[in-house]
Length: 407
Image 1 (cartoon, rainbow, N blue to C red):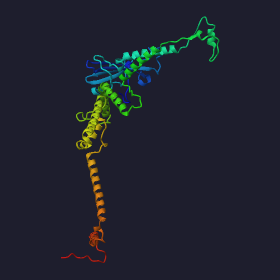
Image 2 (cartoon, helix red, strand yellow):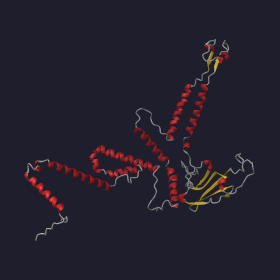
Image 3 (spheres, rainbow, N blue to C red):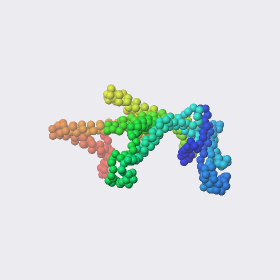
Image 4 (spheres, rainbow, N blue to C red):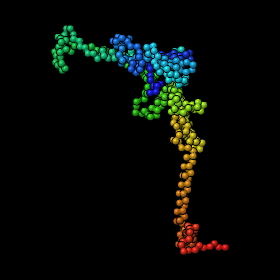
């Protein structure tokens, strides 16, 4: 793990030593770096002298083999780089035990071995059998595709006549005197092809190749279930990588961000990073399925009314989002926001009901002044009260006198 990202070393470019518990103790890597990039005087071979790989040495453009030695010393990782048995300047560095930038990954753990074993080794027999059958079928198909004509020795037709005859030519002779060699191994090739299909299917299932049934009745639900099955298998396979790659990678990234000041110091007893991939993702997927099945069973057995009565929609949404690894911040409405929206909706509904009732009352005969003479007086009194209420408290106009209060 460098400043510019990750760098991968193949198996022929590094060695590792582990203790009895499988923990890394020492690492040695090998890489080729241009002599100009090192910035120091190194051993120069004789001009035009061939190296170990046959290339000429002594040129400035030649790549230099640089070895990096990493070891665990007193609870800290210490490393330096060497070239031509000399330690390169400014190549020494250290890192905490939990923030090691050198990660040696394994796919499967074998007790007592420094290196892990790949998925291919578990199915090496099927892979070799498939390769052998493929080679046999290819060679047999090439032999069957070869066309050789046989001419009877007692035939009047000469082989040269057959060889020189063009397409559609007329040659004198009898059909029984000329024949074609046939392999006659079609049944054997069919057996080999069927065995190849069986091996391909087994290897595809072993390496989690998504195989969807090709038919007109294939539904999206069938494809989704197939994908979920692959994800469940991947969750178990990558559980080791979660421990050996994701957690150390996250610790190293946090260490570098805090060291450069891009991230403040995080108290370990307050905030703890959590891995949301591998086995943990598999557990969340099972939680999601359980939540959905619980809601469907409740709605089907007890009805939507009982479900709405006993089920909290807000908590259900939060748990469903957590099961899918979605952050609900600023996405799901808070209870305060929902309460304010409900109160506003109730006020609007009350206003609409009051306007509707006022319209209904205005259309009754009691509110008609022609049919109810007292209503005319009530409207006049109300208008006067409204006018007096609006003019009360205003300063007297110019030329008028203020009426003194009675008593």
